[in-house]
Image 1 (tube, helix red, strand yellow):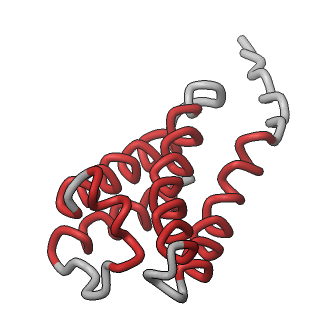
Image 2: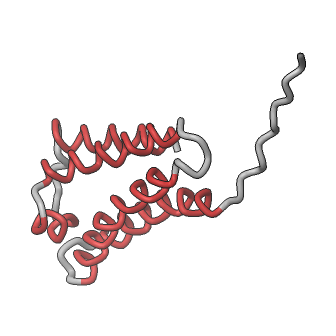
Image 3: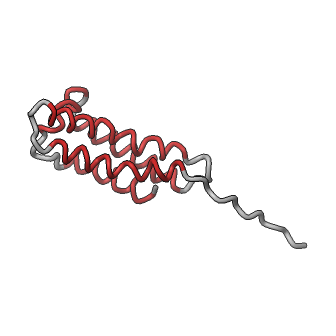
Length: 122
């Protein structure tokens, strides 16, 4: 979760300081909120993932929830732009974002091995 959280944070920062020049695929997302607000949401999701990476098992659910959740509007925006004919490569971007988010969902479903109990020797 730590690498994903870091990448999401950096991606959000990039949207703030140097937004992508071709935003045709993000029309749906930017109709909901400005790219500046989306950038801050990406940063917040990324930081939640980074913090969750250090939490004990069971308490890290927030990271597993928000990391793929922030990708969903991006994926849907690109897919919608492609289906409407506004962005011919929208299916590619939607597929890439889906492929990036799926491992987070897969790992979230894994059972974690039980932790070894420490025995105090006196």
